[in-house]
Length: 400
Ligand code: ADP
Image 1 (cartoon, rainbow, N blue to C red):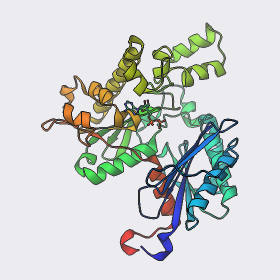
Image 2: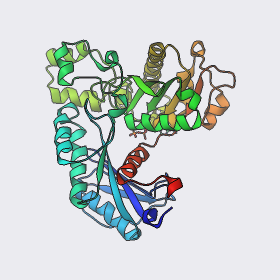
Image 3: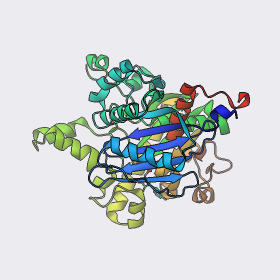
Image 4: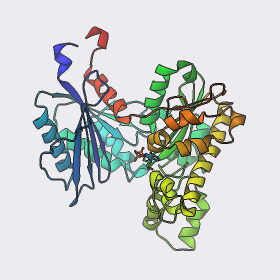
């Protein structure tokens, strides 16, 4: 490595409504030097940072009532601990790149204006993401900043997966099935290309099962179907989000229950999914598995059922399936969900080895199964860091 790049680092930022996730990477090493998260930004804000060994860092006191303050405290902590590091570029997670942005983009005033116009498509996420960008721009003038989009991975998908069957003018207005979790799918396909390129040449379904959950059908490396649609509500049920729903239910809530849009939004985003189905027991799969009660069972049963339905549909649109990949907090850790999803799917060539599944091995399918089933831990931050490295012009390792 040349001296020039030894101490230069790349910051990734993921700004949500009341949280801020940060990670710091070197020019070549894919293990983060520092990771951190500010939660409940406001009167009860907290900030935690860990070094590369996972050890908690002594946080420099700061104002955790605003995103600006939380970022300032995170930066001050990093600078105090590692005064030797120099910031080369910053990467941001931005949920929506619209129809236009199909790859990471360097943030300029013009790009910011374009992205601001997409806020009406993702009102709960996009304004916070962009506020995070503005905060970082003010804190680090002159440092290149790049946006990485959760929608970009799906932008090449076929029209039939991109549209709804409503008057065509809505499609032209941008009411499309954008699909999300694209940074995760980007990472997982990159890993698959590295560890099993023969699978990437074929038909893969990736199930990103976390607090937010979605699935993506990937044919020869290209997204051809996604379970999330126009918003991050569609598709699979999630921690507190409903997943696919008949729009007639919304009309019922509006017409019969006389709920307004704020009340419906609250139900669909915050009171549904695992939380809603379990009667308020929990949005957290670990707790539901531990509870082992009828309420918990009906939530897990529905979760598994929808994943299996989606899996069948995705295999159908690709004319078969060569690999199923689990990722996300549930996909990576819940042997129960993985086992149950794979049950009775022998007709698809899916058959798991229970020992390998219990160990959480990289490959969990039986030796002679036709379809490979894998667990690939996802790293969305690393995709952002790599985009920041590219913008800063980090030379290839061999040349360094
Ligand atoms: P987010 O979408 O917020 O990034 P994560 O990917 O961290 O969420 O996933 C969180 C989910 O993963 C929670 O439902 C949590 O219970 C589940 N999870 C984490 N570890 C386990 C485990 N060992 N067994 C079952 N579920 C787990």
